[in-house]
Amino acid sequence: MQRFSVAEHAPAKINLALHVVGRRDDGYHLLESLVVFTAFGDRIVVSPAEEDSFVVRGHFAAHVPLDDGNLVLRARDALRAAFPEQSAGPVAIELEKHLPAASGIGGGSSDAAATLRALDRFWNLGAGEARLQALGLPLGADLPMCVAARPLIAAGIGEHTQMLDAFPPLHIVLVNPGVAVGTPDVFRALTQRDNPPLPPFDTADALQDWLHRTRNDLEQPARSVAAEIGETLDALKDHGAGFARMSGSGATCFGLFTDAAAAEAAAAGIAEAWPYWFVAATQTLHKDRD
Ligand SMILES: C[C@](O)(CO)[C@H](O)COP(=O)(O)OP(=O)(O)OC[C@H]1O[C@@H](n2ccc(N)nc2=O)[C@H](O)[C@@H]1O
Ligand SMILES: Nc1ncnc2c1ncn2[C@@H]1O[C@H](COP(=O)(O)OP(=O)(O)OP(=O)(O)O)[C@@H](O)[C@H]1O
Image (cartoon, rainbow, N blue to C red; front, side):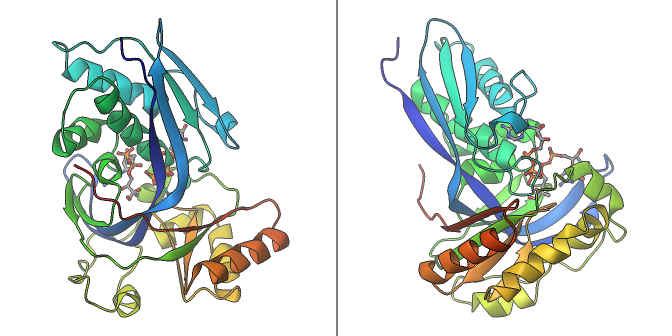
């Protein structure tokens, strides 16, 4: 039996830009998105056990299912099923839940991706990143990008990921106005499904210029579901964000700041003015895997 615990960070996923460029016959939308991941996030710890178990702790623990509806358990089961010939014995899984659920920053997908990475190491499967991405896709379109968890461009419904090396580090404030927004509801409220593609991005490009030429096509439909998104973006801009936009299907918005001190000051100001909102100052992750 494996004698050591393995821990994996499950970062927040931020769609810096998200263009909806078409729709597949099965109803899934074709996207082009520049995605980064943050130091702030959830945490998965897998440990040796006599039988399978799952516990959730942390500020948002009460907001996620404890049964097979949790993407963490679905990821564990998918990995076991893919490696029937290898010993994939009982395991205790602990999830520390710091990311708000149903909030556009991929909490469940990132937890599932971290579970795949952690169990791949714990069970010594040597699956490799591409295999883990393919195994994750049936659990959610965001899984392949969350397995990679470093700056990338995603395309298709999320199954194509192209890593961006030497992406500039970013100081970010995440703000969620306390409204859970269902991803299917936002896609349903979308009126324009064939929008212009993402302009090409080169890491040598000025990011701010590029951001101003891009969009989140899910912002308008999300605002029709949760009007608080407008107030959230205003709060970030009023507290000095050089750029602010909604991530994914919302309602979490991100603001970009010049340095960590500016991000922390803005986060403190927003948290004081809106004590019931979720607010976190953080920075992007760039660690290479594999
Ligand atoms: C909005 C994003 O977060 C951007 O990164 C993702 O596209 C959503 O990824 P996700 O939450 O992993 O999505 P899934 O769990 O696969 O799908 C939830 C629902 O969102 C819609 N959906 C999702 C992804 C996609 N490319 N097109 C869609 O239309 C579908 O109605 C689907 O039933
Ligand atoms: N580990 C988990 N963490 C959060 N939600 C989970 C988890 N497992 C299952 N879920 C379910 O998935 C739903 C979507 O939550 P999630 O946080 O993944 O959405 P999201 O942040 O909008 O993701 P995305 O940005 O990928 O659209 C929740 O309503 C919740 O019931």
